[in-house]
Length: 467
Image (cartoon, rainbow, N blue to C red; front, side, top):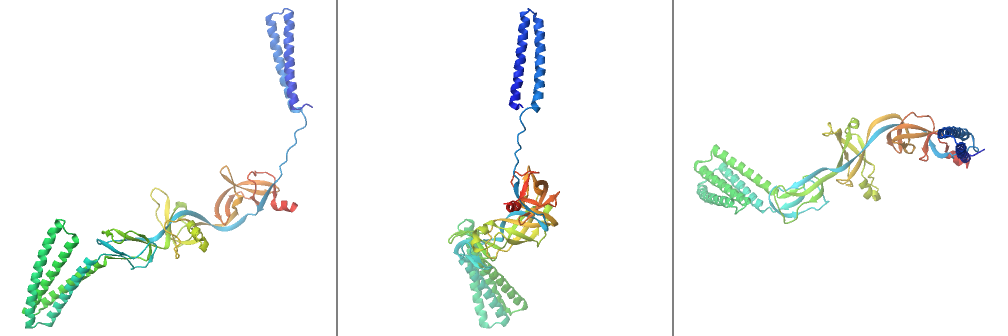
């Protein structure tokens, strides 16, 4: 029998032979002095016959001739690892990225202008509420406080005298004191007018003007006190006089309290317990109202704000436990055995409304941080349980193969691979949930990536026993 190459050679030989016959026929007719029309007619006839003979021979010889069919190369079965479908109750989970934030951050600000005299903390120091952080120059405030205390003492003394009654010699002394008080009041008033002019011209500071006002106020109070004493001694202490003296004492007490607050504002103390995140000034610098001096953070606990979509937020409630992973904490604490990848947090709040322009809802997770390993600004991953699934079908994650954007698993069916398209769900401890037309057959866990539906396969365990 002819092989395929021999058939093609025979085919072309027939074409050539028939072509020669046509040419010879034409020549014979020309020898007999045949007309041109007869020659053309014979040529068309031979061409048609040649065409059909060639096609017939090709069709006849093509499918039937040749040697025996080539031998089929049989593929060896792919060795695969098998397991069984597993059913378990699971919680679906969602993992969202976020950032570690300190539970509170406070800027300690200056309330009164002044020069920084002392800074008592450094970066990273731990402080308790009320600790002295820094001190400003407080000499002017101290003077005002002393004046206020003196005025209070004088008012108290006058009230005590009125209540005790007066002697003749006391009246003489009181009148002398009144003259001194009047002189001091005039002097203070004149000094205040002068200071106001200088302040308007920009020669002195507001602080100096305030001191002049305080002195004038103290002189005025002294004058009033002296007058009251004289009146009391001359007329005797009436109930009205006593009430006035008591009012002066109250006024002096209020002035002392105000001066005390001004003085204490020059001492900057920690409003919360925490750590020093930043020191904003240096000793000797001048600061003004509203200038930050120290920034404190409270990092125990820390919190992580995450955002979940509308299909997940309904399963989350305050008090629910969350699993938190902070890779940076793992990196620098691994040698100390501090688990930064298995932290436990608690949902402290779930937003009742989505973000504007989206369907994302804010969720806040608090994480204890007693050792301070979690730092403000670190990247974090939070895993939250959302939906409970009873009797879910689970397979090892390695059993799922993706082909053209679809997920498949392969079953072992009497030495053949049977592919089934599945829908994947929650993942848990290396297992993944699958749904679809599943069979009660062993599942192929590991196999070549080229494995296709219907391919011959062999169990790895059986292959090992056969050897």
